[in-house]
Length: 271
Image (cartoon, rainbow, N blue to C red; front, top):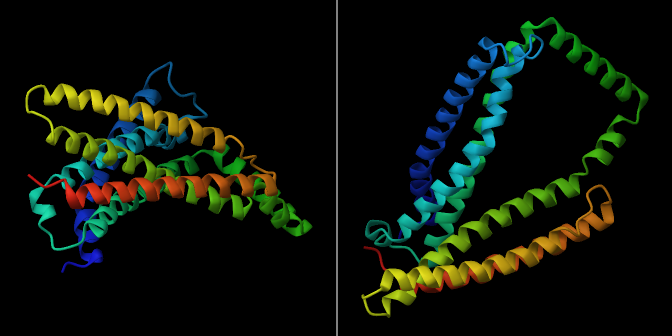
């Protein structure tokens, strides 16, 4: 039997190619637009030119992240349908978890690369006297706050650790929810159409997917209403709100995951 770790690593290697490609495209696009903004008259002002590269990296980051979600979801479904991957001697549950977890881990890896690119591309800003002066003033203000003795208290009030960890957990659970919903749509529609005549099967599958999408939209709206109850900065209310939303998303993830594993095990075969 293949171990979960071995399968996770192999799936991760394949998805990592997409991460490097998107990071490279983001860097190239940001460099081109930054250069255009510096050289053009209507682009960056003289004071903003030193940070143009870093700004464009941050601007293109959400686009690269969204592209990764779409691309990794497509890769997930492709691996579910691949006979080569499905012949790996491992249980359907471990196969499903390895596929989703490798996509999420590589997504986080892409974010770390983007942070690194943002830091590196900000280095030319230190050539600007204005930037160095602003950083020096910020550093002096922080030093005063630290010596005053209430800096860490203000920092913890502004960035409560409990809420940050809860928000990160909510992000992970939501990522699992997105991948699970896509897999649910794909596997369930394919399973239903497999029991129907080949004639008009594509049309029937399209109608089934529309119905399933409508159901998921209703569920997502209900979940969004629950998330709106979160009050950032009000420790008690926000932590309770995060806990409720996280428990709700975790339950939905478990339900969808169980259905997907059941479909993979009993009905869906690689081609």
